[in-house]
Length: 294
Figure 1: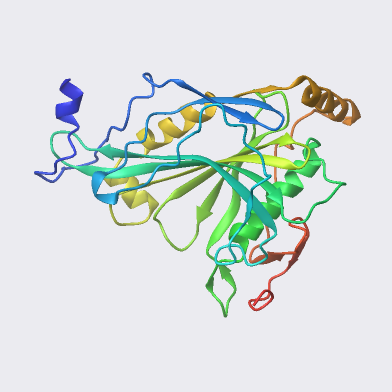
Figure 2 (figure 1 turned 180 degrees about the horizontal axis):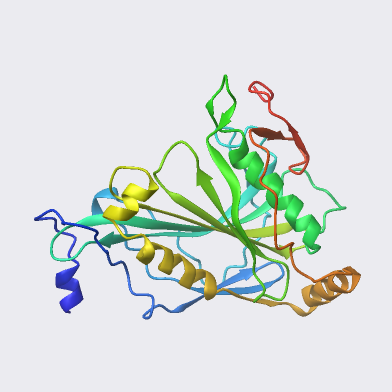
């Protein structure tokens, strides 16, 4: 009860020094269950709790629904010029963070989950192999973000990736988390978790968080402690579990037996060479040309 009063949305005064905000409680969260093509994904996350003024809409999980790509939409050319990937939205939530003793709104964490697949069917795709998963991640992220240019003349990319590329070894199949970092702006931190849920289908968990203040990252961190935002993201990621179906487990075992090294994505990944384009297959990288898909 005291925390509700202490971390009120009301802003009646300015905070002095570094502020450590508070968001929703993770300890009170329940396990959410998502039925996917190759099994069941479970995770924990707080209920949707955005800043009221933002009126951020939530995509709610549908109980008992089995999610797949049968009704997936191709990505819009507004943010993926090649339209080489399709997606099916599963859920989304947003959480506001507030400072102590009526210092008001201090930032938020956005979360969404989607199924992904290449727009063109490819019978040779098998994302259960670590190398294929790495290729798919590079293809999707480059198609989505690698074409964004801050300075067209100098071909300065707006973003860089992957940053803090980290294999996830707590799941029964290859999985990875990594950051996409803004180069020329300081509005949000972006993190992805991606792993296969069928030979031709990926699930992607997307997180974005940022502090409600101005400055570069160091200046923002000095004003508003980023640790509470990061902790919520890390807690959700740590809660992820995936239980394959019997058939999908056989496919995983076959891929694992064919791998001579560890059954995981590489521990290191070279920075993607951006700006760049992606071919219509969603996987082949191409030299950046501003008018390629116009």
